[in-house]
Length: 243
Image 1 (cartoon, rainbow, N blue to C red):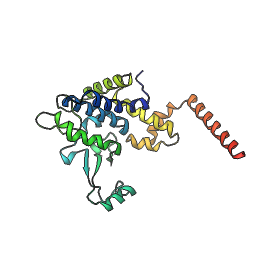
Image 2: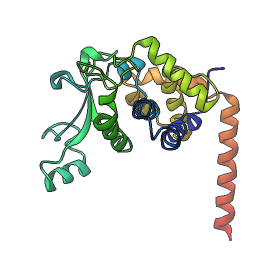
Image 3: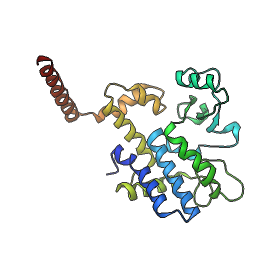
Image 4: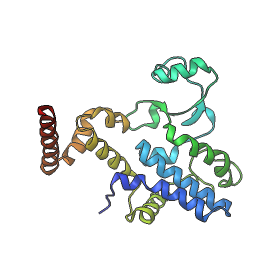
């Protein structure tokens, strides 16, 4: 009863963008909250984070920040990616939005560091530069997301906010954790044999966790549908070759 298809969840940020444009242009504070909501929905549908990491994601202070914009370190997996290496070679001062959680901040006790999705950066910078400063009063608490009183989101307030947004824009209340499941199931439907990607995407220590959790989702009816599609495609290819 709490399940909403991943594609329907992905439509929520666009609906929030239209709502911001059409309804809130004259109210800066409500516009700031709606921009926060759009970024939150984007991150939930792109990053598959646990609710804890959404709540605790920090912009400052720099020494403990989880989200920051800096140059690429000379060594490490990020620096070795060809597009990043080429961009850094052409413009050594180029900075990228990066995400980092330390071992003590992850469930598995393993550090993670990667580039923020490029689809997030424009809205992220708009929110941080223009809207987030309107939300906190007095001292900046440092977390990316703030409630309407300018304080960090609690476990309850995050769940309440996400469930209200999904009920309003997708017709059903969905809790933050369910976004992880929706992304994983959608990935495996589109990439049947690739369990490694969702394992790393969900920050699991063992690929067997994905197999155990999501393998059961692919029951006999789904297998039959895939078999029928494969048979139809295979026979179509044979007919094409025979002409």
